[in-house]
Length: 161
Image (cartoon, rainbow, N blue to C red):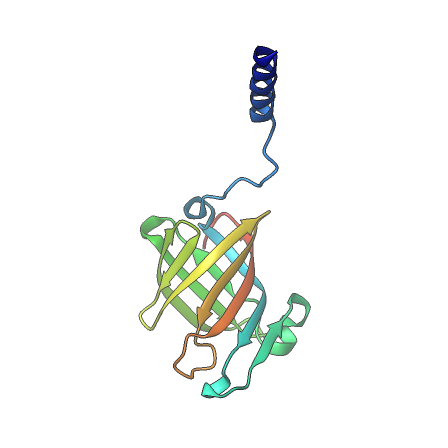
């Protein structure tokens, strides 16, 4: 009887290992990032505004991007060669108003962007060509990295210009 029970558990173990996992496969961020990404939305929970007890939420959904920010969605180009990136900020008339350049690095699920002025780290989750970039940062300029940033970007091309 014990042999039959052991055989049953062994068979159940073999069958369960052959079934597909229901958890999504992890994405190799270093492989996924190269290409062109476009901002979709931003949400920032600003804590202790200017070092006070106040807080607020800055929320820009996709449909209100141009209205709230007065610019086109930001396009960021990640180049695999030398890990360079640049982001273009374009006004509503199609004029480039600013370009941010730097290097990008990946550590597990973390994307680090290094520019001459700052270094940012984002925890990135990608599914279906859409990435959610989360970070703690000093959004309100009060000297404390206590603001919760969450930005959504869509990969629009595997190529950069």
